[in-house]
Length: 258
View 1 (cartoon, rainbow, N blue to C red):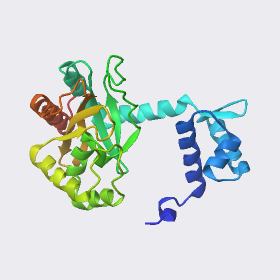
View 2 (view 1 turned 60 degrees about the horizontal axis):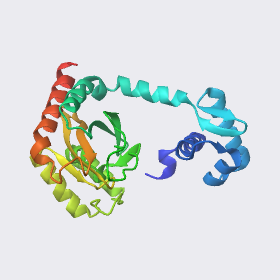
View 3 (view 1 turned 90 degrees about the vertical axis):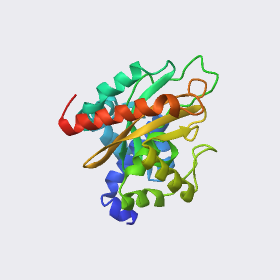
């Protein structure tokens, strides 16, 4: 499928690119937006002014930033998501039984990327000796534990489509060889969990289990922590609790529990 098929309304794609730029850069002027996106200044101005007019951007003396309205839209999308509705309490329960300095994630896949729907205690630990950068908004599925847990449970055709987009490295530990990744995904399906040893973020380790119902994989639950708070092999302590949380969330989704 070519780009025209993916983006039949070009103006909407430009608006998307403008929003993404403001999210990435923060407050930005019209000229900088035009130069970054290689569009006429008048086009950049029209899109920015329209975004401000509908409330998704704020114009502060000619410099534009995204508005909090996007936050509220995202929060509503999260609050209505079945994985959040049926998984939030189990994530909090797992968090209460997780050692200090670790956090629990509820992750969903959208458009071939993994996105954190909910996370507990996610912040850089001040006492950690390891510098840990912020977790990206959306990440490639092959580069982290919840992503690999999801990827392993996708239908073969869909998994092939995701892998065909490439396996870029986030760190020097990311699995970038397709044969190696497919072998690891086979092990994930067999054992019921996936691990991440500084593959997405240097200084962070994690373990995750997929959440699967009769409608397919719905997401994953994961425990992450800095390398000085997570053992090099987190399986012994965390594999069963994480898999147990995933099974409970699956049951909640199927039977409508909280």
